[in-house]
Length: 127
Image (cartoon, rainbow, N blue to C red):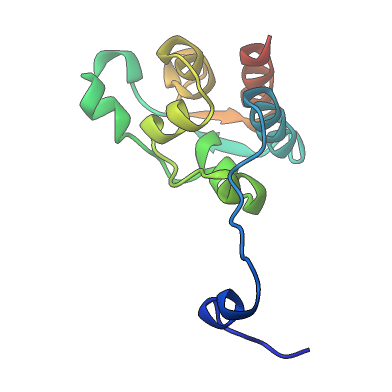
């Protein structure tokens, strides 16, 4: 097998790029499955998402958050998840502020939460 650059391949074949193919439900189900793999894992909650202006809320993130679990997955990354910010999770998973708040905000769980709790909230957003 000979390795070739994309330009070399274009010269001999039609190269098609693919767009993400997972539906919203599939993306959310994948996220829930990732969280369920280590149900007792402690994850960082985001503080006061409902109290921040939309622009501030969109850039909120936390190391070890439920969103960072999704970002670490190569499948979701290939589907287009760009970073582990609140705004990117909202866009990528097509969630409302209320839905994402239920998944990541500290007001329900304190500073940390078990991964199983986050998974349950993700599954509730599917329905």
